[in-house]
Structures are given as C-alpha cells and as structure tokens.
Length: 368
Image (tube, rainbow, N blue to C red; front, side):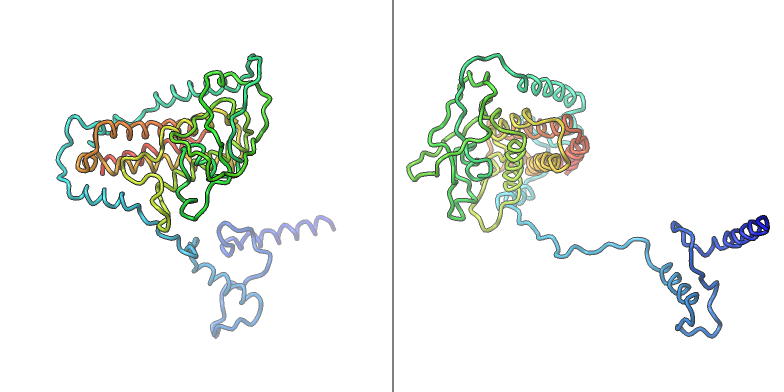
C-alpha cells in the first residue's frame, strides 16, 4: 500500500517537472495551475483562474526587466561663480599656444600626467602619516598644567569659521547674523602646547560675542591642547564644517555676498584650513562607522573638485589675468594640500576609490 502511494507521488512529481517551460526565469516553481494556451474564441475576458494567470504571465513577459524613475523634483542647477565664468571666457579667447617654460603647471598631456602624485608617493605619505598619528595619540610624560585654549561650541559653525580664519562667516553676515561664540582673545601658539596632559574638558563654552570683541587677523592654528580636548564626535563635526566650507566655495549661493574665495587668486583651501584638516585627521580614530566615513569622503571629494577647478582655469588664464609667480606657487600649495587630504582618506581609512577618481578627474582636466 505504501509503495503504491510512493509510486503515485513519483509520477506526480514527474508530471510537475514537465512544466519547466511555463515557469518564469529566475522565479520559483509555480504552485497554481496555469493554462497552457488560450481558447480559440478568447476575446480578453478570462473564464477561470487558469486563463487569468496565463494573461498575467503574458503581460509580465512583455515588460522591461528594469525601469528607471525620473528624479522628483529634478536636481536644481547650481550657478557657477562669476569669476569662474570670467576665467573660462578669458581662456576661450587666449590662443592655445604652448605655455612658456616658466609656467609651473604644465598642461601638456604627457608632461602633465608626470606631475600627478604616483602610488609610491602615496604609500610613503600614508606610512609617515600613520607614524605621526601614533606619536600624537600616545600619552605624554609632561608634568604640569597646560591651559586649554578657548574655542566656540562645537555646534557653532559660524563661530568656528571666525575662530579658524579670523573673519566673520560671509554667509552669516549676509543673513544679518554674527557668530554666537568666539574667543575674546587670540591664543598664542606656544611650543609647550605640543606636550599637554590628558585632563581636559570635552568642550569649552564661551560668552556671547560683544560688539567690542576683536576679530582675529590671521586666524588660529590648531594646537595640541585644543585637539586633545575634543572627543571623536567633535572632531568629525569639525571635519564636516570644513567639507561644507570647501563645497560652499565651489558652489556659492547666488543670494549671498561673494563668499570664500572671491577671486581666482584666493585659494579655497587656505594654509590654515589645511593645517586644521591635517591635525583633525591625525586625531581621528582609524575605525569609523559608515556615516562617519561618509564625512571623510565628502571632504575628499571637495578636494578633488578643487584640484579640477584649479587645472581647468589653467596657467594660460593665470598669465592672461596677470597672476604673478608667487600667486601661482600659492595655488600649487593648495593642490598639494588637496592631494595630502585625499591620500590620507584613501590610505588610512581604506577609501582607495577616492584616490583613483581624483587621478582620473585630473587626467581628464589635463587633456582638456
């Protein structure tokens, strides 16, 4: 009796195996009966479930495998800075003759590619940067009290811009606002701050800005005492601010006053910006969450766009607009700082695609 039932089950499975041509590719085997074909007098109205499933499968087979929905709303078009438009217009009028031998940034195809940093340089830099990170994160044997510099609240972006650069945030001034917290006195750069103890508060609150508070003229460089008083969340918060400021310099809001920079001769990644970003990356943990890595990728992408913008303007425009040699050297230092930041993000935190994208973008800019 049991053998007869097993035999019937085998025959039933064999019949089911013959329905492979009815099953859709990539889907599991059907569990409902489907008509093998439609009636000769079929006029669009199925009479039972089998015919209905047949029409559903036939309609599904005629649909594309993949569809793309349009972006709703469409991404807004970002207006290019006026000085960039002027520089491109000048470049279009300049004769495409070979650049003079004294030009620092050769835009030739073969020669330009040699001026890009290679893997050997990146590996050597990452090795040295990791050694630097290990040294500054080691506890010191310095005995004594070192004052913690006064700095704005971590959540006060405009206050930090004023603290770092020594001038008000252009976007905040345009809105009739002033930074809510900045130091009343600049903190002198003391070499003794390189050896600070570990007993610092995680945040130093400052009184509101008064009308008589002085504005720093040269900004505030990073010091070890301040950096050690910041926790990892605060370090990432400040790196997010620097990424925002760099992106704002690339895409200034049309309704604001001319933000940073206002001319092709003023670098968006100023030396004090580079010092702060380098120091913050040195104090950042090497194990980050995905959202924290995204902050670093945003910063590195902004540096990549700064590199491309600098090359797209080109030395021909620099010469046509009267850029001097020392100014060209300043722009070269900005490019060097961009490569250092990109190499650090790629080498320490494993974002190697950022490095490859930057080199590809630069090669495309060099080839015009």
